[in-house]
Amino acid sequence: MSARRLDSAKALGADTVGGRTAGQLLRLCEVAGLDTKDSEVYARTLTDMLGAVAERPLDLPPAWPTFLSDDHTPVEFSLAFVPDAAPTLRVLLEPGCGAGGLARNGRTGLRAVRKAARRWGFSTDRLDELEDLFFPPSPKGPLALWCALELQPGGVPRVKVYLNPAASGQKRAARTVAKALRRLGHRQAFEALPPGDRHLFFALDLGDWEEPRVKVYLAHHDLSAAEAGALSRMEGGPSPAQTEAFFRIAAGDDADAAGGDDRRPVRRPVQSCHSFTETSTGLPSGFTLYVPVRDYVRHDGEALHRATALLGHHGLDPAPLVRAVAAVTSRRPEEGGGLIAYLALAHQQGHPPRVTTYISSESYAVRPPVGLLPAEAATAG
Ligand code: TRP
Image 1 (cartoon, protein in one colour):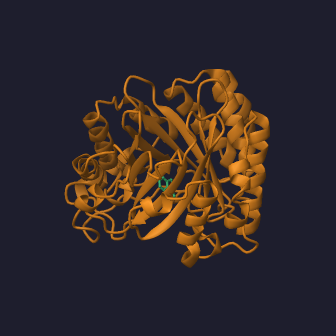
Image 2 (image 1 turned 90 degrees about the vertical axis):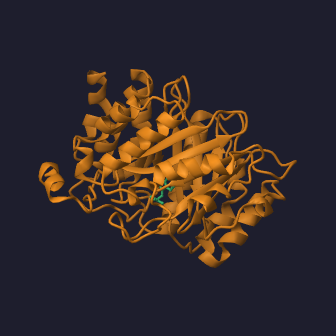
């Protein structure tokens, strides 16, 4: 492994965006049980998709204030856990982060996805059909296009594309989502969604998926455990009690007292995602709840406890997560808050529930811990 590792990551230097994130990816690939050849392919894919930003020295400020991650690294990792298998490694990235401006960001993103499609021989038809909705001439924020790769054994990733419902303004976001769903043949899908505060992402599976999904993400501010339990609209989905249990483990027992305690004064919203795979029933076949765990803890030591408890609750082995943390950072979890960005529980018809842990690159910055007791602060220093 180490000789190969020299190839892609070290060629760029560990103090560049591409070198740092590719190095993290290579080590995470080992945790996910991918072989050297696949790992090397995926590391190179990551740096290719980042374009010129891959070579950008980390001592320069981020090329673009992306909100993909808190410190504006245009890359985030995640591990998806299912019973009796190695976790699946995924990487989320912003191909247009170096393009200069949101319109160019989007066009660069589209080019990167189409290039990937040619390389791996998949169709971008469904994305092409939506281009006018999500790529207007003067797009609004907060993003243009993100791309996620699920790193399967074999060197061919499964691809997901994340689009911005608010591209034509926040006021039009709901209408944009409704139109996009209808265009893809999901005529009743919009009505099936639960109430929410904001449409955050519209996502498409592209490439080699058994059942490619169309996904709609909603933000829910100041959500209580009981409200979380009532969100799923999935047929045969989780019971309110199951979702509440997840919410309490991820957000902590006092999570209902939303905001303003000794943890984080401002909390990002919880997010729901409903996914649609067929057009006949009009009902979603998948439901995922995302808790921004980093806003519900003082530091990553607590976030890791939550993640471990959650995995344990589902009979899943937390060892790969502990190894993953060591693969991305040498700092102690207690020394910062935000390495574990989200915890999620995903339900998909015909599959066991999946626990997902989102792992920040922290290439630019570590968010300091909050509310440490003096004694803890002393040992954390
Ligand atoms: N960083 C953004 C956020 O915290 C977007 C994001 C990155 C995100 N990874 C995510 C949102 C995983 C939900 C789940 O909202």
